[in-house]
Each structure stands twice: as structure tokens, then as C-alpha cells.
Amino acid sequence: MDNIIIMGAAGRDFHNFNTYFRDNPDYRVVAFTANQIPGIENRTYPSSLCGKMYPEGIPILHECNLSEIIEQYNVDQVVFSYSDISHEDVMHKASLVLSCGADFRLLGPENTMIASSLPVIAVTGVRTGTGKSQTSKYICQMLIALGKKVSVIRHPMPYGDLEKQAVQKFSTYKDLRIHNCTIEEREEYEPYIELGMSVYAGIDYEKILRKAELESDVIVWDGGNNDLPFYFPDLHIVVADPHRPGDEQKFHPGEANLRMADAVIINKVDSAADGDVEAVRASVLSLNPDVELVLANSIISVEDGEVLREKSVLVVEDGPTLTHGNMPYGAGFLAAKMYGGVPVDPRVYATGSIADTFQKWSHLESVLPAMGYSEGQINDLEKTINNTPADLVLIGTPIDLARFIDIKKPTLRARYVLQEVQPLLEDIVKRVL
Image (cartoon, rainbow, N blue to C red; front, side, top):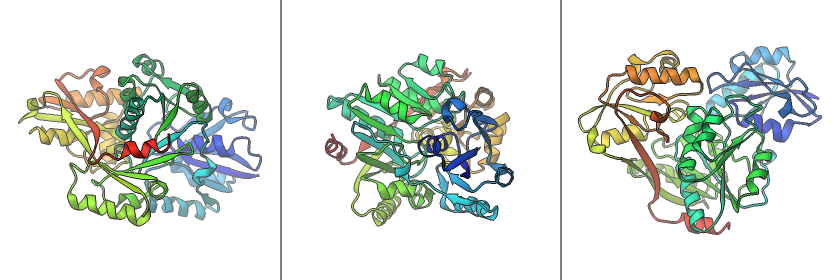
């Protein structure tokens, strides 16, 4: 029996365990390690989710101590299980593991995908922040217009009580409060609730799928970061971003998604340079010559946007897109510039964990990432927003932060929706129905 460490970030790691290692007599998972998301280490994957081989659960430790953990537990294999990390960084981690005497391993997608009795449309990306969720919503609205009952299943974000988060369904704003959702969770779930839809998430994606199948004609998988689908897709749509040309071939497992794709959407072509759009098109076709290509705009609008003209604006953007997604700005910044606003630099006014975020992600200047993985971090975000001198706050996240943060300035929201340059997706979708 081999001793295993699963390197993760509270998502793919748990799924890999549940689908491949749980109840597998050839392996014993001695620990998970955690990275990328603040505050998810120093807890236990509970015995109720582990199966009969792990009556005491499995410890979740910080990845920074990986070499010591390998030695302490006499580890044979380290299984890398998180996403949106450069190929170079993956190999640096592999080199560390090999130097400690263990094998470094990546599980193939078919080892961890679950089969559904219904058609599955998977939407994934080559990076964080490409526009997967706006694409998923667009497809859901298309399917509903075709008379289909749709269930959305979202990539996991279990940052709280793992036992309580095994199977979750969000249909109302009350559900978000009941589950004590973080800002990052709300950003993914609220837009579907606004459309009158339900979205499923959690930890045990076999149970989640079976529950969703009972109320659906079609399953839409809304992926996280640039991770691989958790379900075998009948249609795999991958979203690429011309604001980061070249990244489609440089990040794990985004390149694998691209090579597996049935269709690729090059999004944000309205705000990207023509040369960058063409570079991404050529890059996509070099890896997947037979893929169907769709060009799309990410249309940004601000109600009463003229109010922004010549005003000082604090732009608050989606956190993961700016941090491990490495984007220097998002939809809010583009909207501020479009309407003549003047973005302010919030760094000097940041407090607590938000100040730490700016120190870690030094490429950020005139935008504030909406980091909110814990109550303490949400409080730090609120203080930073209110500390920063600005005429108003432009919220570029998919949710209205003013609903649950006390912002003591006028606020406006930047919204964005997918718009196909030449409608093709409906024909592509109909083929799998």
C-alpha cells in the first residue's frame, strides 16, 4: 500500500480523493496539502466523507511544509490536484517532490470524471477570469428557451465546514446566508439565482449529480479556475482570453482543456487588440486543429455610467481573476475608463489581509480585489473600501457587494454579458440534445 499526499486547494483535491482513492486498498492518503486559497489549511477532511479506511479523517496541512510532510509520513507518491498554475511552477513542485524521494503524479481526467444519465455541457477555461460563468449563463438561457430544464453544477469552493458542505443547492438569497457563503461563492452562485435558477456545489460530486439529475433534462458544468470537468461531457466548451495571449499554452490544466475541447470561445474580442485575438486563434488551432471556433464580445454596461465622468473611482474587481489569474484589471476598470472615470490606487489604504494581498500580488495598482474568504477578510475589505478616498465605488464583481458590506460611498455596478460575434453556439448545443 502506497502512502499518498494530495496537493490541493479545497476542490479538485477532494474530488480526486472521492473518485479515485477513497476505499482503494492500494493506497493510503496520509494528508492533503493546501495552497492558493488563504486559511484553508490546519483542518481535517472529515471521516464522514472519507469512507471506512479513515475513521479519524485526513489532516489538511500547508503546502509550504511539503518536504517535511513527505519525510514524516514516509510518502511514496504526491498527487498534484489544483489548477491555474503555470507549467513551469508545476515542474518546480515536481522537482521538490522528486528530490524528497517520492513520485510526482497527475491523474488523467477519465480517472476522475463521473458519467451522467443526461447530456452534459461542460464550460471550462484556459485561465481564471476568461468568462466561463457568463458563457455558462448564456448557454443556460439558450437551453431554457429551447424548453429544457437545466441544472447548473459549479466547481467546488468548500472553504467552511466540510461536513455541512458535502451537497449544496442554492436557489434563493436565503440559501447563501444559510450556508454562510464567502464573497467568492456568492460571485458564482448569485448570478444564477438572479435568473431564477438553482445551482449545485459541494464536495461529493457523485451525490450532487444524482440529485441534480432528478430535476433536469440537461446538466451544465460551470468550471472553476481552468480545471478539468468533473463529469464526462457530451459537449466541452473552453473559453480563451485574448487579454492574455499565449497563456492558453502555458498553464495547467488549461492546455489540456484546450486540447480536449469540442468548441473554443475566444471571448472579450471587443476590448482586446486585433493582433492578440489572431494570436490566440492561431495558438488554439495549432493544438486542436479540428475544434469549432466562436468569437464573442464581453459586453460591459453601467447603469447611469455618465455619473462616472471625471470622478475619482474605486474599482472593486473579482478577486481570483486579479490574484492567481494574474490579470491587472477586470470589467470594472474597463467600464471606469469607458465612461471617463479616474480609477484611484487603493494600496496605501488597504488594511489587514487586503494589505497582504497587495504585497503578494504586486502587479495590482488601480484596482481592489474583492477578497472575502472569511469573515475577517470581508471586514478588512469593507475597511479598505471605506478608507480609500473616492467619489464613488464601481463594483466590477458578478455580485452587488453593497448587499452585505456597509459601503459608505455611492456605488455603481459594472455588468457584463456574452455576445457572439457570429451566432454559432445554438447549433453546436443542439447537436448534443
